[in-house]
Image 1 (cartoon, rainbow, N blue to C red):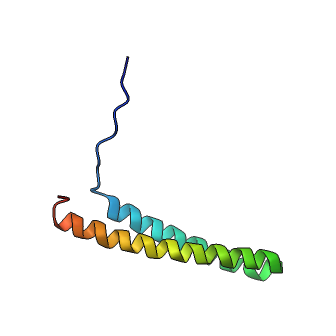
Image 2: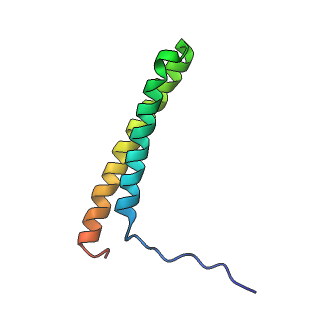
Amino acid sequence: MEQNKPNPDNRLDNVEKLQDMVENTMENIQKSEQTLSFASDEEKAQIEQKNKRREQSIQGFKEEIKDEAADRENGYQ
């Protein structure tokens, strides 16, 4: 019977993954802003709230990128 083993911590591409997440989130903001002219007032409010959360996520991703880049330079010790 095969035991469940955790995957080893491979952080080598975390910076790139986080950068992709930033780009994807920014694209989602742009796409949703394009729909604002067609949205009802209630939908506009929901889109604007969601975009605020997306912007907060982007800030978090950027902080993680800084941390990961520093860790990478230090050899992930």
